[in-house]
Image (cartoon, rainbow, N blue to C red; front, side, top):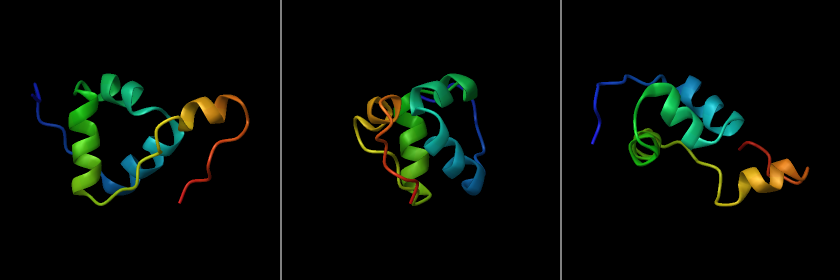
Length: 65
């Protein structure tokens, strides 16, 4: 459940989801991870795959599409 209305800018959100984990961004915007993922999907944004941030931590992350 969204506790407040958040208006995301598509280009900004695209860059942010590839620079930081969705869980960190959700805290920043005051929404749940699921709601942030849903907003990204509704905008047609590709999200990093599961395990992406673990790979990045070890220098093997996938490139931003």
